[in-house]
Image (tube, rainbow, N blue to C red; front, top):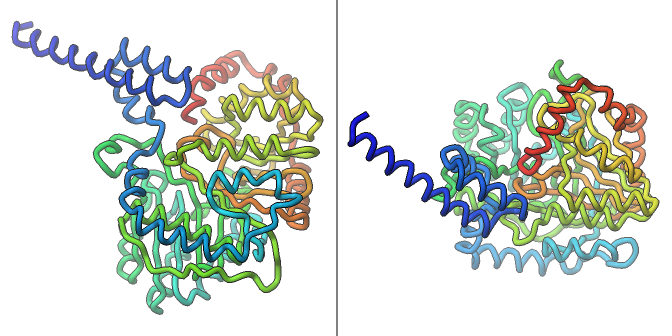
Length: 477
């Protein structure tokens, strides 16, 4: 080895260790937890050759670019926010029983529970897809569409056809997709939509110099808003598997909501901020709430994400768990709670709350499934019941608190939803709606079997070792 080559290698090693030290300082100042800070700092200073690229991809705590963009659009966006707040004032729900103990959620997202909403459960993909297409076909002014995953299959083509028809009729169509979740979506699909007059954009989570290597933040929201009057939020993306057409999963169990009323304006506001980040433009939309003529269900739209000052999604789950007095049922495809949510679940069960967590028996992500198994030994002794849904894959994200509050949306019970993903939940405080959710979950629980520590101990040694190893990755799952 020549002297020049040795000199170059020594410079490279010195530079890598220097960058590792600087990144370790950044980790100490901004890591999501003390444990994470210690782990990153140790790795970055000892093996920067491996740790540096991992930190640049996975180590960021907040989506800084989104925060900066929000500030740049401060005046324009805040005028709309102020207008929406003023328009919603006549529809603000009474914060007495049962809403009183959920007032903190209003302060968390700076939006009120609104009355005058018609909220309908949509169970499974065919019903969800049909309801969205029906609403889109009736659009007169605008259609806003946002999904984490969009497939170029029959379901995706049916959605595109509906949007193209409305665009040709003069309706303003805005289509936003997450480029990481929809990495398989073809340019042909997108160009075809654009040619019809629709505005189509990726969310651009890697936009900006600081985000160039960042693939860890995802926009996991699924939102459709029609004319600012009708909105859809929930767990299902756009693809044939979400309608149970993938034989690998069998039945795909999902839940969505159709919202009509002032809550639709709040969902539209969430879309607007994401659209502004992606395009730096503000589309012309209707902001005057139109109450439902048939129902009066109090609803809060809870949009959370890694640009929030507080860890809003995690705080929502902790608050919902602590608010439960008699019952807490959660349906989630991924059960990887952080310590605060884990402890809240334990305490709820210990104080006599009926705590049940419904998860799929057949997972779609093996590593997440292995990590979720590691929590059984911590929740079962406290009295938390974990049950596995057996007929197919369970993808719904539903929370039922007592007999009066239920939430449906996009957030999973995992660290990625708590801290890394942009999510959206609709929280409905209405006894009649809660009973509908109860009946739906009772049917799901009737098709579930208990998952106990004894089941895990009966597994082979290699499986139990894999479970413990997977737990190490819990902060980014």
